[in-house]
Length: 146
Length: 185
Length: 146
Image (cartoon, rainbow over the protein chains, first blue to last red):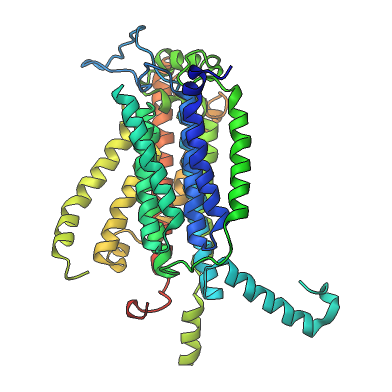
């Protein structure tokens, strides 16, 4: 089962999974909010690459019919075209990705204005101190230690 | 042969850029590297025959995304604080997730297989219909605007919502401006 | 930015070409890679470039914020309006055959044109609005204090 053809046929999926995991590592292991957003973008782009590579047909070309000088489409049955359906889905996904990235960046700006920092550990420290002070004033009715 | 070589070179540069983003502390360099990553992935999309997607990724990823991130780091921070926790636990999590994903791809069809299930059921109908019913040479546009036009309406609504969300977050007076006004009074 | 002579001259020459290219990409989406999203982003980039080099106040005179906000809603309205128009003509929602029942392919052309125009208008408005929102925030400290 594990022969050279199988490995060559699936190598592209595994390479894109390596890229995906690099992006995921940046999101999980780094504390800076802007870097997390960059890591999320890398993860998203690697997922798009994986998806587009499913639609590729060997020996194919871009799915656009050539148009001759009179404006009529030439349909040549011998030309192989790549599958256009994954391209449409990924076009939508790219635009949704930029929408979420811009919202995340706007949130980061607001966080910086309130907390004066964008490092995740410092923000958690400030939040812990604030809730500890609240607990001192209002007592265990707030639910105890946060 | 030359195409495989191009793919290998592009992929190696992508991996190097991603690893550099992991290690670098200067946020300006990180944002520029993310723009480089988007551009390289647009080139990879062209070798995978996805020209519409490459166009969109180059315009959106290497254009708008870089500008917005530069605007953000101008308003927030220039460098990243050095991390004190060890990266061992995230690394193990990432390796386990990667192994699970690789196990999932063992069933998938080979790269470039013309008989893959993705290319067999609906896609040939769309390719033929784009000539007969819709008369538009670019099949991706005909699917996007006509066959799957409802999804594109939802996508436009998502862009609309993102614009409204950013306006709602960032249109009010900032804390510093309010403090200045209180001092003047 | 008043001391960057090359940037100012090149921007003045390029902004017109960029807007023209955005129109080209918008209307040639049927024949070559392109369409509403790419055209909207390229048009927004022309205004953002002008704003970065010449200042936010000048670009706000050319493209005032009230116009940007109207454009964001106008695109979605145009898209949904095309769908509802085909409803009123007796066909299903977003069925472009309604626009020319004798030649359905001509109706499809009109429908795709209107829909892509709506998408392009919304994307332009949203990208320029996000840039205005980011650029309006006062910076936390002056450049020399970093």
